[in-house]
Length: 201
Image (cartoon, rainbow, N blue to C red; front, side, top):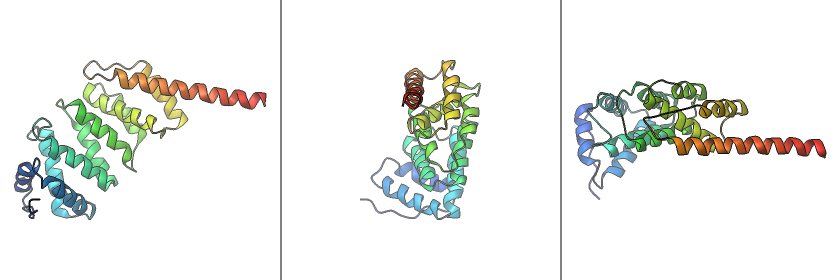
């Protein structure tokens, strides 16, 4: 295992070091170290996180070339899990103006529901966005919440209604949507059978 040195205090210098480490054996240790520092509120770590998000926003850091670094930041924000981390990740999604791989979308969508500050109404707003990239995030996150049975009955009904007419020609979500609708319909059928049991008993 390579020795883990301290990061430079300059955010840009720190990011350059992380870029050189992200595909090396030292990366896992580095990421765990950053997770702990971020959770403890270390100012330099958070300054660097904000800079990484800005670099990703501008395209200077891309999922194609910096997948380990960017996915590491998503895991880090999920690990910290507070309202600040949630807002950083969601604002990144809401400000996206360039295509990113479906795998990156799925990673973020899978981890969004792990935050305690999760706002389902906001996810519906993102899912309704006219931009197909942002919309796909909202849809994937809502489908994930449904799979985990974390939506209220009203939210399930709203999701079912939304997905029935939803189209996204840029990102292939058909399988996910069909599976979710199947689950929602099964839930409806199960509820109806429960009500019938109550009537005939």
